[in-house]
Image (cartoon, rainbow, N blue to C red; front, side):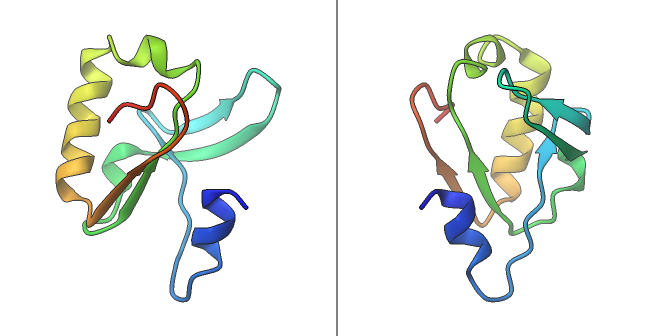
Amino acid sequence: MGPVEFLVALPNVEMNYVSLAGGLISSRQGFQIMTDNFESIPPNSILLLPGGRGVRKMVEDKVFLSSLEKAVQQAELVLSICTRQLF
């Protein structure tokens, strides 16, 4: 069971996927998902940060890191998973 399957099974949990700008995001494998932008994250949320190969570019992106820092500060709980996670 992955973290998304676990979290969505909790009562009163609403899953939202976010990215820096929002919009359609594609994985290297072709999986696509519609995302909202970082600024749409409600305060006191659980923020789940995945890792993986895509993170390597993002750790150098100052705009992304600044937006992420704001989201982390507002979050009730921050979880990071996978190799090369941001935290």
